[in-house]
Amino acid sequence: MSDKKIISILSLVLCFCAGCSVNPITGKPELMLVSESEDLEIGLKYSPEIEKQLGGKINDASLQAYIDNVGQKIAVVCHRPEWEYHFTALEDESVNAFALPGGYVYITKGLLINLKSEAQLAAIFGHETVHIVARDTANMMSNQIGMNLLLSAVTSEETSETVMTVANLTKQIIALRYSRKDEYEADIGGLDYMVKAGYDPRGMVETMQMLQEQQKVRPIEFLTTHPSPENRIGYLKDKIQTQYSNFTDNRVGKEDYQRNVLSRITN
Image (tube, rainbow, N blue to C red; front, side, top):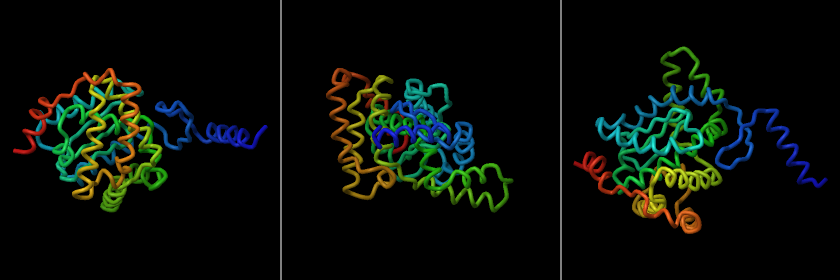
């Protein structure tokens, strides 16, 4: 037996012994030291602090309902539709979007202003939902911060010290970086999700092109935690051409996005 095969077998054995789950995006087993219930605990604990540090929710019930409705269209076609998902728009002026374990997806006013259609919004939500479903976010937090530290703040008695700890850890969560592998899977998986939800796949490419243009003018917060869109545009276009060329008549939703989002946050 070759060394490569032996290493592969040993990796699988170690994976299943230590705790392993199958990544639904790739279909491959991956080492996962955090349980799904712990994902939910993390999301419940840190989501209020995320909202606080990024200016709070945009105070517009109709806008929030529209944002969540688009997100739920992605959620029902993802690999884990039985989970509970929350899609929320925040007041922060930065150009950013990110996910927390347990089904929490956030998008900032700064990014919403730069989007032009519902399909582009669906592209963002598709991408972030993949991170949750593949449990990239939990793995990233475990590797870059330490899950024991994160969970200890969740389970400890609430004191001024633990409140400060949660606040500091939340700042680290916002700044976490995904690997290029995770980002590739989120791009391709997110593209699949948005098409299944009925959206024009070109919305994903348009969003990447917008981020690339914005980056020329000023640093983009989204790109401090996500790789540059330059190379990503190429493989997304290839995917659309080879697999989704017949889906470009899907929903774009420019008028609805203008009415439900842009007209409400730019006046």
